[in-house]
Amino acid sequence: MGKIIKYEWQKQRTSRMIILFTILAGLIAMVAFNFDAIANNSMLVGTTILLLMATSFLVIFYTGIESLVIFNKDLRTKQSHMLWMVPKSTYEILGGKFIAAFLQMLFVFTCVVFSGCICILFIFFINDGSIPGLLQAVQDLGKAIFRLNIDWRFFTDFFILIFLGWTEIIMIGFLSIIISRTLFLNSKFSGLLSIILFFVILNIVEQCYELVNRTLGSSGFQFRFTDLIFYAVVSVILFLISGALADKKLSV
Image (cartoon, rainbow, N blue to C red; front, side, top):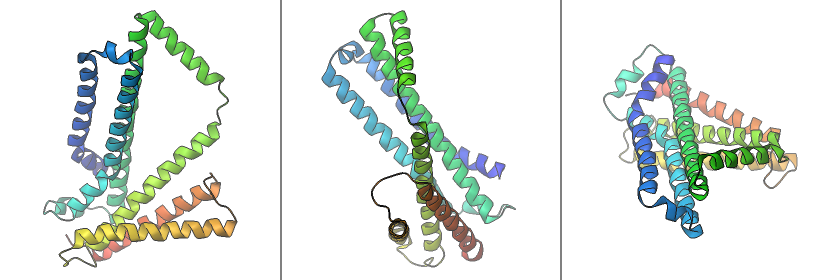
């Protein structure tokens, strides 16, 4: 599976380079266009933060579904034979694609967080005008965070739930694309059908989730261990169905 992960990682190299270039260009532009004026204007600071957040959301969103775009391309182009004819099981190929997608997400998320920290440090530096003042501000911020009564278990459950939710979306996407390339292979609208199938399967999963909630007598937004179990089990089931269907019906 390691070679598959490496192969998938290389296929996403261009998007990583574009993302890094965009982040670097944004940081250079902020310095070039009078960062001092931006840092001392609360409206400009707010606007800059909103733009950074919006851009970060779009970048992370695209990265989250990029693996689906690549997977769909793998099943439509002639070079897909290079991947599907390797002496690996369908489950290993899909698993390798998922792990590569996760590593890509982790890389992009790290870059976004790092660039955000740099922007914040620049603002502190411009306002104070000295490196010792900047270091003191960072130290004070760290002490303030550790003094907060943070429910780390809540944050841990939150990030696990986000990861499982994203995993579910990827697995639904894999299954939708595989169905469109197997059961509807000769259809002219297989691409559109895969999108429709995605939302149909997603709706079925959410209906099952609501049924579980009603059965357990819970409602509203809350973290429960059963939520994590539900999304984990659903993701595994979708993965197994996708692998079985691709192994028996897929033709590239």
